[in-house]
Figure: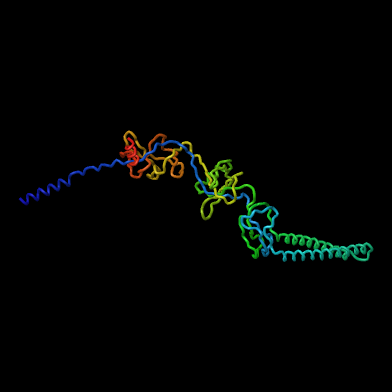
Length: 367
């Protein structure tokens, strides 16, 4: 009996092992959806900018010397002809005096040589001297004349350099940087102050590399950009004036300058520059969460509403716009696309529309 019971148990286990497992029922997943439509195909990008002068210069002395004074400070307004800094003029004055003395000596020598030449011309006419001696006297007079001309030019140069001891503003503007302090010994060309000249103003901002071409397409178009000062709700039209040809070595961004026209902006103010790009006319807007990757291409899941199943649809993305993408091809307006849960779906899978519990409870309570 025990042997027979054991045999029955073995046969029972064998039957259980040979039986087919019941198929796993795939759950009906809840998904969020959106209806594809053209909508507004204008993409907007905002950039932080600061107001700068279109014309700005670092001013420096033409000569070397010790900085004696710098009467202007950062932020001061200056006018054309105003003295911005002063070098110690003593050495320059000594050089000018030495050049004047050399000029006087050269003039005296020339006058003496010319007088000698005149006397020797008379003696030559009377036959008292030969032609060779006359040629030497004429050459001496010409040499003295050349030395006089050289001394005169040197005297003018030294006189100009004495005047260069004062750094004078060429145009009216505002001091935006100070690069030297009194007591420093400066070489010629060392920056002393930076002046932003009065006149047109720019909103200067940095743009990423992938937007350079689209920004350049707006260059020169009046009112293509909008500039709004922080703390001021009034937007102003601006024109993109310039886009840098090279990227910044550290940030890898490109500098752009927008002419703000007659906008009442002060130097250094912060502003927001808004750029509106027109997407391709056939482009459709979708949330970024609706797009997935499959076999190296972008895809979305399209809902078959009557059957409540999904199918995978390849698409071509035109561009990204914040949390949205603009689809160039692959979809038609009016199709229903899954916007959440796209990474867990399979072709032909049954789905149901997601309902917010809070919204459903509020709806039930209102009945």
